[in-house]
Length: 291
Ligand code: PXG
Image (tube, rainbow, N blue to C red; front, side):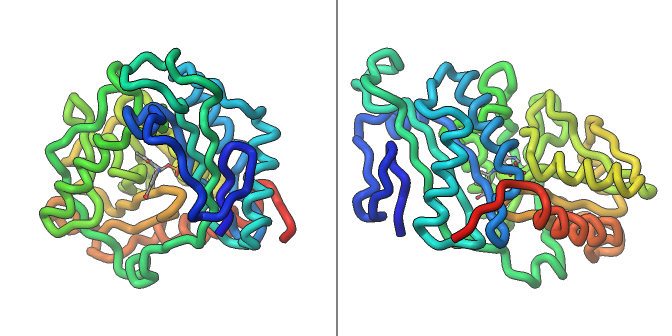
């Protein structure tokens, strides 16, 4: 496997950065998780835009233009001869001293692009659906660390994931500081009630997911009513359908939340329709490449 590291394609074993990198010492950096489907990088422009926005917000200068970043992603995919892939872009503050001050990070930010086979949830999960719970760890407050910044500091989500795993679940709902449903540890959440689609607005503790946006676009095209609206746990419990969205997971049906069975206890009709349409869309929008 070849990894892109600061302008060079290096072997996996040589893809190393300094222990003084502030990405490691403080989680000071940003990232994106992207997917390629059959030589099409799905919504690469949107992912790169979000990456640059995350970086701007933390005053991290990415030493490439968005166009160059696009080219380097494609170069890395081609070097690994991957038609289908999970792509991780990581930008770290770079090598500094043992203090927080980012000005002490000499040289450029580090740019890492890893492309790998996708590790998918097992297919039966999409047929059977997932049971999830709400966990005590609330999502980061936007006024403290805005969830729109995809920073290298994911401990908030990892703590919630640990709580879910400790209780025997794979995924968890995180609430915002007011107790409304924010999102899951690595996915956005949707509910369906009376044929209408609801998802929390991006302003509280919710990342504006690219899969989330895609589902909203598809639903509008299919004339399904969409509402970006605060959601309580009660509204999740009494929903007809519930599903999660994310680049890695795509659309995962949820069949129980905190012990309450959702709808019929099986993946819902609208969920299945949106998953089918989503898979079509992943063949259409993005940047194509040849290997
Ligand atoms: N919310 C959070 C907190 C995320 O990290 C999403 C929603 C979905 O966004 P996209 O743009 O992918 O539709 C994410 C996605 C994982 C994993 O292993 C997921 C994400 C990041 C890192 C790992 O599931 N981000």
